[in-house]
Image 1 (cartoon, helix red, strand yellow):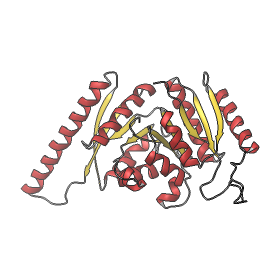
Image 2 (tube, rainbow, N blue to C red; image 1 turned 90 degrees about the vertical axis):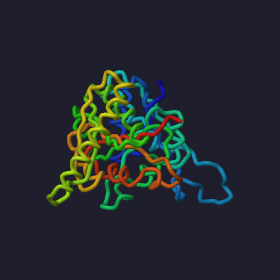
Image 3 (cartoon, one colour; image 1 turned 90 degrees about the horizontal axis):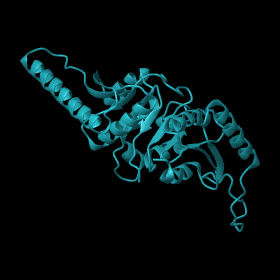
Image 4 (cartoon, rainbow, N blue to C red; image 1 turned 120 degrees about the vertical axis):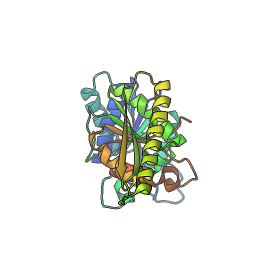
Length: 289
């Protein structure tokens, strides 16, 4: 696949952190990096004030200088990287979703502001992570690189979405030359004693072993070169377990449910929480469409 890596850039710290990760991803894949700036705000910024003027405004010279400066800095830091930069007359989120039709990976920064999920990710990041037509890497400026030499983690639960995430995570691990860790998060052991508790615990352990073994076999069939590890985790919730495990990872991969037309339905509560709070960049798996 020779599709480029695409990253949305607007000059903010979040977008510049995303651009750095996008440059790394492009070098690993041996493909060009496309810096894209969508300059029509969905609420009207950049749109002509005169309702009778139906023309699309021209690209901003200030934004063009920002793009050219960012492209030059990335090309200097990453040897062999080919960078293209352009402005597109469209809202940032819609522009990146459209660009994802021809991309191998879209990288987006999250704003990292406030304590609410929507503020943490921002509307653009949420829109792209949910609706892109290729995998999406979400980067927060406060955790731009995670542990660069750490493994790639992926949560597995036996679902088709988790299987697709494991496949894309394995490819990423091979590119980075790091192990792939399959993480299955189970509930914390019940706080009780007795034969019933022991039986339930034994049943859970057997289930976790079987699920991880099946996931490992599927990954090895398509990625025989990947170094694979299995890591069962106990936590209060799946999202909490994955977030805690991400502290030593270079990338954490999650799946999408693929249902409905709304962000929450597409990402699912676990994926949303992981995207917001993981300690490393998050790869949101999407099929290439």
